[in-house]
Image 1 (cartoon, rainbow, N blue to C red):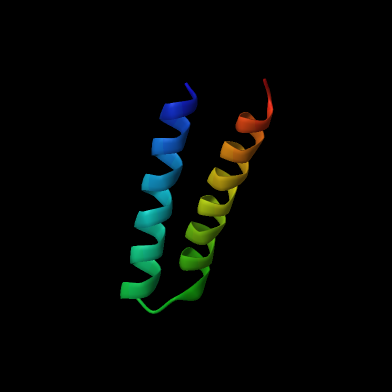
Image 2 (cartoon, rainbow, N blue to C red):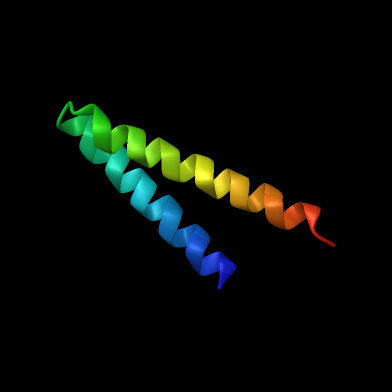
Length: 50
């Protein structure tokens, strides 16, 4: 389940960053970066738990 969430988040993030850069609009690109930050935080949270 966690792996599926990671794959979905990174896929959505990359698509949103791509669309933001290609169309020169900032909000989708920032949202994509936000999804990557969420993914990194989720990975850090799960590594700390035994």
